[in-house]
Image 1 (cartoon, rainbow, N blue to C red):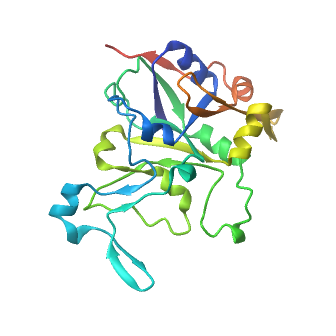
Image 2: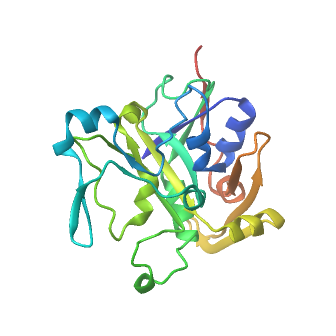
Image 3: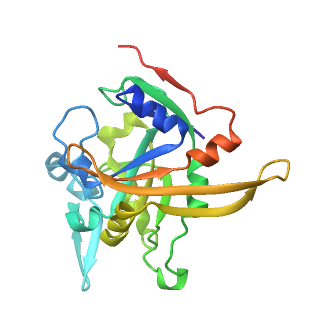
Length: 248
């Protein structure tokens, strides 16, 4: 599936086009104070507005605890937990109005995430992973409101990073996410982590399928993971991914 990544500078566009993708901590988008379309205080949470609660209380999802049922107005993991998610956001729609302040659009394919998924297998054995967490995942974002609840995530907890309120549905977002510990983040900051697997091209020639992961903090203080597959991409593609300048 073809995706579009919108970025503000030509330098970032070149990096993404050659296969260097930066995943920011999910809590960045909760705390951002801007009006570009990135900020979302309810990221990673299920939250219904006061208006929805007031006008459609019967449409709220029903939860239960110790046999007692109740209407759910908000389900929100704590910030420490959500800070373990790092996400890369793109759009399934080519539109210059999806994210404000972006001057360039890079064409990507979900195939790149399939490669990441192959290299970044979840280390927890399936029998011990009843919650369904994933080290790496990718999927379209699911949009919800009081009349359209997101799908149940029992046994598929990784999907908690893929729900957003319907106010953002015009973005048609597709994202990839990594769920990592503070120890992993620190380790990737001390030295580049290398994930590799033998592969062959269409002619049967051996290829070095290699992914590099680095961690860091940008000038604004936001933590990120940088996934770099540029060496492998340059070996199989004649040129970097396409990108274009957006009109003002």
